[in-house]
Length: 113
Length: 110
Image (cartoon, rainbow over the protein chains, first blue to last red):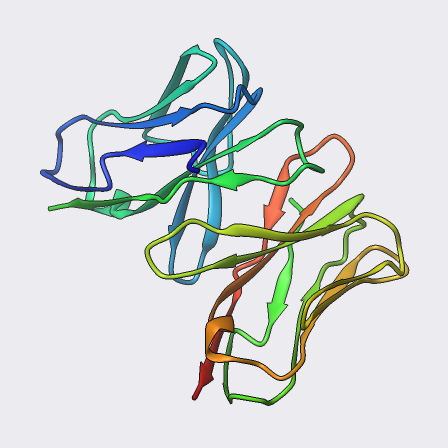
């Protein structure tokens, strides 16, 4: 019943290469978010979107960019991957900004070597 | 930046025991949510509380929002191995996005 899918689920890439992670939703929700999850830091917001072509930075946005050309797709790009970007990345969606709760994807485990 | 502190960070108990985990902040939140995350998966929403003093029950799980809307607790009665997971609280203040705590890793041993 997944209304949100992330791809790829796992990726290993080399330092300095660009990487794009994809989040696709079938719920027609307005809000989409990208988080990274690291031990000792919890979930940290990278970027979020509140509509097509409307995006804003989160607390750890340096080195990342996003695009949302369609309601259903939210792309996260690591412009030049570094080892510090090795993490598990989660996409989330919500109908409203907070109260409805977030639905998370299953995550992408990214390793930068 | 609003911070949410969860305690304890780690909890290992035997099946059948009761437990409480806490989520505290110095900030007031208009709503607070609890999520559970299992290995290899994203967090799944358990409950949202919005009114100070509100108590919600989900089977053996009881969630409470503090009167001042700065803290919350999750109590599990007669824990089972299936309750094992990372429990995350997340708060939303007026006009802001959700802030997540770092989580409580619960292990229930058979």
